[in-house]
Amino acid sequence: MPYLLISTQIRLEAGPTMVGDEHSDPILMDILGARKRNMLGNNFCEYYVNEAPRVVLDKLEKLGYRVVSMTGVGQTLVWCLHRE
Image 1 (cartoon, rainbow, N blue to C red):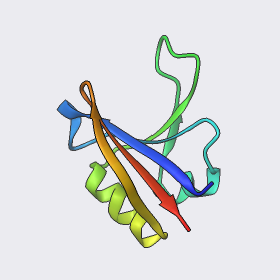
Image 2 (cartoon, rainbow, N blue to C red):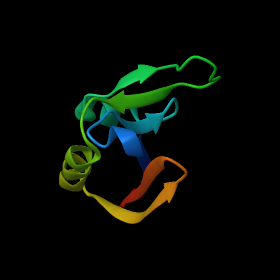
Image 3 (cartoon, rainbow, N blue to C red):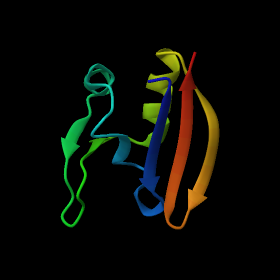
Image 4 (cartoon, one colour):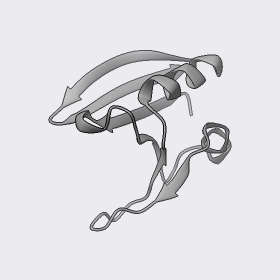
């Protein structure tokens, strides 16, 4: 998958960082050290790491991902990345 969304809550800028959904590349999730979880009340799973978004962005840059856009949605920060 060439596109990836990562996000974090504004009050949790030091982590955890959400790095994928249940359909994300399991090899990439393993490289990032991400764990899969299902939050109470959600009918989907997500991958997360206990690191700050900056650390995750640094790792993804080394893997060839580049930030396409970044925005704030309510209390959530979201980055969209793309890999050639």
